[in-house]
Length: 375
Image 1 (tube, rainbow, N blue to C red):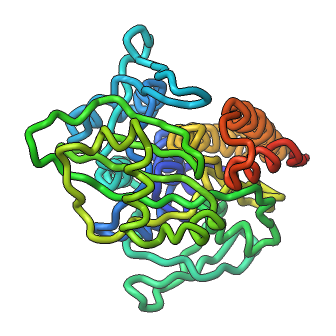
Image 2 (cartoon, one colour):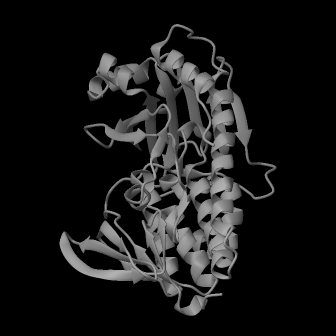
Image 3 (cartoon, rainbow, N blue to C red):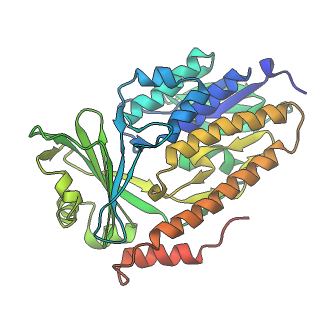
């Protein structure tokens, strides 16, 4: 059994997974070094969380502090999926209360600051470069503000670097990829005094699906999820073509009436779907989007990351106490979670049958039918 008070854990990445894990580890008595590469002012996708997140924030001991932040209530969702009829999923009777529309950059920074209050060493503006395996753990090399920084020593490393999986890939793990989507979006501001809905909105269309959600400041984020092939064919990287397609969406277009774009160009993100071939290794593990990345249709990205962050802290506690099977058990859990995700994704995408010849729906439905699950 190792002494937790001198056992140092380095976490690469300070998003929801990395910061949540840091908080849980610090509460368990570990020393934590958190490498934060977030960019100030950069817009982050992932702007709403379900009611279940309240339970996780309470488990981390940060719920009361979270309530003092600038986030706004989300009372559920409405969707047009598989038919022209509108469906609702509200939080009126949810035992955990309502969800939240996030100021995502604020939320990420909030978790980092909570970890810092508990004693984490934060390396801000830090870019992980490489590592060397040592007798006792790892030596990590990084740059701070593009300048070489003294290497840090760690007994254990957690890769929470997001979809880059930088540490895991360095040690031989590969991403088993599924069909990826592309997200193209624009923020709209209220200009006519119209109240922005506190529900999230989903609408499937011939060339993908639209998502709209309120963000703090009386703004609305509207995004299209589709494939890169559809983007190329319809030239959707041009804002005017994106707007034309939005105007053809009968329900989503209604949401932006009386609003004006904040940006003069599109916000673009990749939305990959994958599972690492190896989630754990010799005194390291990957969590959050570095380990498994979900299609946004599941609306599970942030809550999955925080859940895994908390669970990783529990697993490491067992591992340090001498239970050598703890890490392989975590890998089994993560891959089982990914298998369950694949089944859920297949179910949701196969509900839509209105456009059988659509390139988008054919690609997605064929891939979800034929995909071999990881073992």
